Amino acid sequence: MKRFIFLATIFSIVFSTISVAQSSYDLSERSVEPARARLTPYHSIPEAAKGDSAMSRFVAVVEEFARKDEGAISTFTSHFALPVSWLNRQVIVRIGYGSSAYTLYVNGREMGFAPTGVMGAEFNITKATKEGRNEISIVLDRSLPANKLYEPKELAVESIEVFSQPTIRIRDIVANLRLNEHGDGIAEIVIPVKCDALNPKSLRLHYALRLNDTTLVAEGYRELTLDMRREDSLRFACIVPAKALWRADAPTQLRLDLESRIDNRIAECISHKVALRQLELRNRQLFINNEKIVPNLAEYEAIKSLDEVKKFGYNGIIITLDKGAYKVIEECERRGLYVVVRTPIDTTLLGDHIRRGGNPSNNPVWSESYLWRNTHALNSTKGYGAVIGYAIAKGKTSGVNIYDTYTTLKSLLPHHLVIYEGAKGEWATDL
Image (cartoon, rainbow, N blue to C red; front, side, top):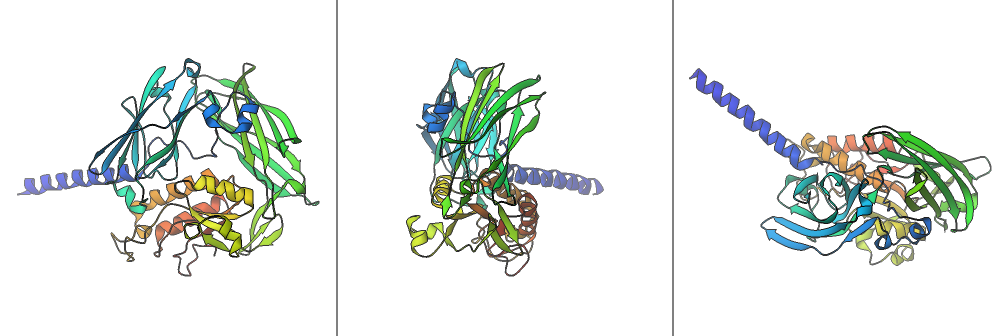
């Protein structure tokens, strides 16, 4: 009898461990690149300034997919060509949209898992690629637990680009700004650089910051050497005149051109729009460039077009980071509209009670999901001057995951709004 009880206990522990591991496997990302600004490499600055990724020799746009449905699983398969000029470089795929959790395969080899596809994700697929024809498969699985947090209406994958960057590459662009006593801006541009090589690599990075594509605000170069699989940042600072700062009534954007050279040969060129402004949160009030603003935001899903925002007395929108959201945010920045980005978490259909097994907002099993989705949304959109804050989720129930996410986002961006509409008077929201 004792032996039976002992064996039963062992089996219970084993199956419990498997269950926990499977739950973690379904909820946690695997091999997703750290979120960043949406950067595209080109061979020259004039080419990069045009902004047409289909014309870049370092980009392969994947458009035609064969679809196969088997119950809750939908497999989208296509091909791309890898030219000989991409050899000895890194190959990255950007999946702009997938309507559920998915696993990525390249030439039959699993390359990563995204617990949500709607925000977009990048994967380094270098090890699985080969010269010539390569197969890419995106396997959507609507049965996975991760999909319970957010369910888009449309089943699809879209906006797939495979691109090549050098082994020491520009990984992100981050712009910070503070005002001086004259009202001009002191900008610090931070450019994280990553080395994927197994031996030390050096690059020289030339930069130019321009107003209206013509007026030069700053230019120069920086040099950096990184050893195996390391990451570091290059920085430069400059004075930005007050007229070049972004604000709602004058939504000025500057163009940052970056040209990296390895052994004095051009390795990649990137042209990126930046909107520089000082955002401050003082005593629960927002200031842009020392001028108080009062956000009056419309739900993007409730309006027919951005033309209606100002027409009906609003000065910005709340938008869920779903299909097409990046283009909308970019357009808001051009128009001078404020944006609060809502992370794609919607728990309104999962019950209101917060006891064990209840709403995910108060269930520790979902903690990593809340944090990963929110920090992914933050790091992919924080570079937009129009973005003034983040909404943790859509829901009516608060709990430990809301509290942890709020404190994490505030530690990363203390002067942005962080809100949760279901806080019910609790401290885990700025509004």
